[in-house]
Amino acid sequence: MNTLPSYASTGEKVWFYGFRVLCGLIFFFLVAPIIVIIPLSFNAQNFFTFTKEMLAFDPAGYSLKHYQDFFTNSDWTGAILNSIRIAPVATLISVSLGTLAAIGLSNPHMPFKRLITAFLISPMIVPLVISAAGMYFFFSRIGLQGTYWGVVLAHAVLGIPFVIITVTATMVGFDRSLTRAAASLGANPITTFWKIQMPLILPGVISGGLFAFITSFDEVVVVLFVGSSAQKTLPWQMFIGLREQISPTILAVATVLVALSILLLTTVELLRRRSERIRGLTPG
Image (tube, rainbow, N blue to C red):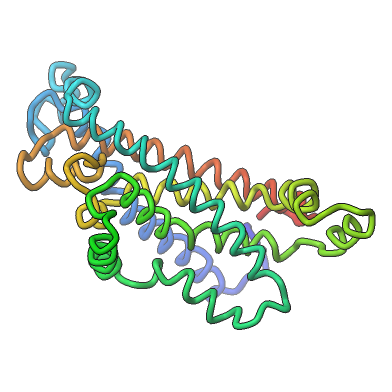
């Protein structure tokens, strides 16, 4: 209920308004640090604080030089290219394997389903440093440590759980009588998958792919263990900028990443609503 009825008691009114005030404070607490970064990225000085000119809204206190440095500095552009080379391939692997795993796990006759599910989503639960250390020792033994494919496979492992969860949620409302009908009409399993299942679970697949892409694009701990200087991604360069150079360009990079995250999460929400409409549910 979005509105308070006229017959509500005093306690109900206190709870109604108090709950909304509490939610607003929590939202402000979470969003405020992100909002502060955006105006700071336009600082004309090499400071991480608001200058007198900025507080006075003097145009001289604002500049695009940090964005210019981001798009022209070879260190930053090289990191962007590495992230673009790694994230899409890792996402493709995550979507392919995660979708197949989700379809298999959605089968009610799947043995040891809970155990297998727990194992597959464990990269989300295990602390990232432990996963990174384990990948480092394993990849070192098989010659993948410090290579492009080593970083791609490591990021794919981190992205698969997101695909499994989103596709499995989409499969909850899937009508299996459709696949049985297709099989009775002579369709083989591959044709049934592409013609029947995939169009219905596609919103969940795309949503999982977007989460996997964000995970790969923003990940820094695993790439520090598994990668080398040749695979220096954008988050890695941001880490270096904070620890070694204290570069204000990080503020511009953070603003760009925030805008990208908002765009991707908006897309995920639109896909979720579309998935609910396809399954005959009312989008909430």
